[in-house]
Image (cartoon, rainbow, N blue to C red):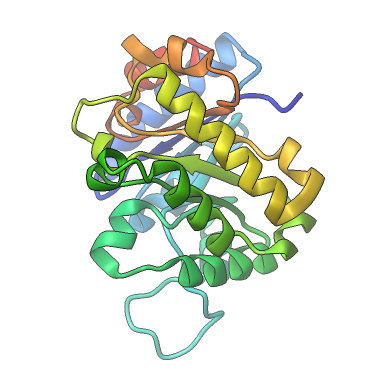
Length: 247
C-alpha cells in the first residue's frame, strides 16, 4: 500500500525566520520516524532556503504553482524547471484559491500538470466544490468534471496526487461530515480510474479543508482518504506533527 501522504501548504505565509519550524519538524521525524510521507510547500521565496535547511531529512519540498510554459516573456511566472532548480520535488496545482483568484481552469491546470511532469515535478492536483454547488447537490458532479478536465491520460506515466478540498471548508473551521468526505473521495477515485486506468489505485487522494490535530485522526481513517493537504496547521511544527502522528 502507498504510505499516507501529508503535505503542508504555507500559502502566502513564511519568512526566513519561519525555517526554524521546518527544522523542528524534521528533527522530530528523525528522532521518531513514522511511515508517513511528509512535504512542505512554502512560498517561492523560501523554496531554496527550505530545501537547504531540510537536506538529508525525510521532509520533501514543493512549490505552490508553476507555469505551463518552460520559459519566456512571462513576468512574475515560475516554470517547473525553476522550481526543481530551487530544490522542489512537488508542486500544488489548481488550488481553489488559484482557480478563483487567478482564473485557472481545468484546461490550464491540465497544461500545468503536464508541464510539471515533463520537467520531473510531481503534481498535487486540487479539486473541490463551492458551498453553492454543495447545497445544490452538485458536489460529486463538480469534482468528477474537474478530474476529467484536469487529469490527462498521459499522467499515468509518472506519480502524482490529487487533493479534494471543499472550497467552503478552506480556512473557515468548517468540515464536511465523514460521510460527505468519503462520498467525494470515492467519486474522485472513480473519475481517476476513467482518466488514468489502474494507476488510480496507486494515486493518493488527500483531503484538505481545515484539517487540524483535533480532527485529523477521524478524517485519515475514512476509506479512500490517502492523506491530507494541510494549510494553516502546517506553519507550526507542533500542530503539523499532531496531524502526522494521527495517521
